[in-house]
Image 1 (cartoon, protein in one colour):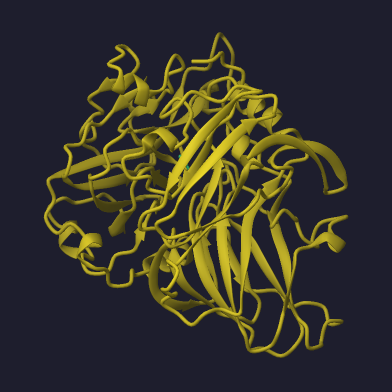
Image 2: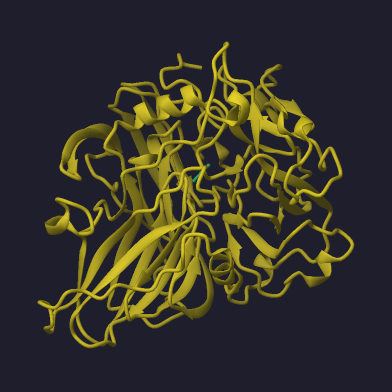
Length: 515
Ligand code: C2O
């Protein structure tokens, strides 16, 4: 993989963007379940970079996971790094992306994991497979957007358009002729391999007049569910069947934001592509699909709640009894602005996210994995706090001001090998309430429960689904609500767990010296 700049024109303006092999979106990586693939990443760009294989569990192989300063030092301009990608149980669609500052905005691509040769999909073989990469386009240089975000400490600037397979679509000026078009035959089944590569927004996606049948999420099969629209968070991926059983003609596919907080990066634009029957009707103007309204939390979470895993063999079973439960708040807090400056958060503060009131700081001397492996002191601290430091009504408005200024730190949670983990994410309304897509590296987890309001340890576990909860690597914690996940800690290593929105306190500068 060659990371390099390439010139692209969108929305009537031309600029250089960072790409892999000159492509936006990047090349598709294809593998069979169980394969091991070796990739040489060469950095031909101007900034430090790393590449992460999002959703690949990499058993006992954190060294190739990719997040900068977590499992490796960033690759300097001109440098290279070899990564070994070990596919184990994944089957379906996942993706790869840059894992340093904001470069993943344009440096990303799909990973298709096919069934092992000789085995087949748990659904009829589709006529054709189609990547649907949802991303966005900034007229500005993305590094400039990042720099502005760091300097102002407010909400990150929103992009100028969402894109489907690199194209904003024909609701935008100058985009009409390049709009992504899927030419289909009538009465065939198409497998859409959908990825949300957007930086800061959850999306609704639908195809006019056609139902989608979801068959997998995050490269784990689900019971097929038929739906008019899907909800997909940054980090998530989905396999959905589209049956072309309508009148020959043209139909829009469209995506736009689900966002409950207009203060935090709300983009109200809609991106489109076209499904065009090759049997006629192509001169008609395309029909537009139904998409839920931007703040329709019920629509967003009814969809997530309808997902159920296929029944698994014993190795993939849901932990029924747990060894450890971690309860962690997820919040947006305020921090002092750097220097004597005034930032755009409340009272001139800087906004940033935290878990259990710790806002994570990346080390920049050496990555955590090496520090752990070589016993290098002073890089990270154990003792990520176990439970919320205060007991209060997390989802109420107007929480005590003292809670809005949490601590910063590089704290890790140590898990005993083999333990059956439960993690409950409790969303708060500290400064701004927001849905948070939480991603765990190195593992898939079962989403056993979710609800609105405060998690109740006495009551809520009785309503868990321990039979067929969806298996995913990224879960959306609802605004004013909570989500519980379970997994077995059987993958030794150092693994990042983070919100897949880019709202951390201070990303490392893109030119850090080698660590
Ligand atoms: Cu999609 Cu930490 O990654």
